[in-house]
Length: 241
Picture 1 (tube, rainbow, N blue to C red):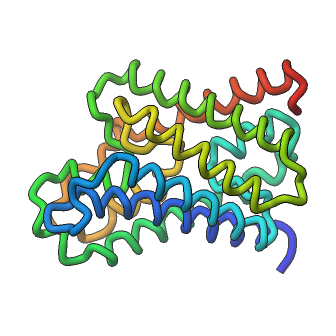
Picture 2: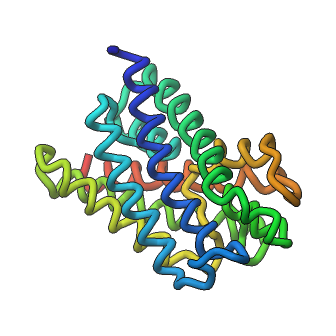
């Protein structure tokens, strides 16, 4: 398997690992009868970070650049790290990985959906739900947090030898944990990874689910894309790329 299909499969597997760890941690800490219910916010952040680290290693090992996030792909294209022609393969793999993650999360917590009454809590296990719904503030939070996240990636890539994949992966995972935990006042996830899982929420027979809230779904897409572009601009300005 070579070329475009290798990228698709690699990004699908890496994204599936990241998103399954991440959203499953939200399910574990919020669903009514989960043993993890009420766990600290840091538990979710740690799962997102570790999921990213392992997902990156999986995707790179399988033959992609290890983006596993559409907004990172956009930033890398803007920074000249990736040819525009390869971007659709990355996007396709990421979307498929997200959808598979949604199915896995549904299966993992299958008996729990009927025991949790709040449909918003169920949606938060598949897609971004703002703590306080204020579109401008939510968009600003997604943009700012992702600017710092992607700028941090450029710093890591400039500082850590490319041969040290484990170091790069776990440094990036720690960066995501910090970014996630520091921006919890506005969003519960974000980072442009929930399109596939939100689609899974739409089509799966989840007991007692409500709306998939597509009216809000564009915010955690546009915000991270804007943040990635801003980060790429400043990384270029400062000579990191």
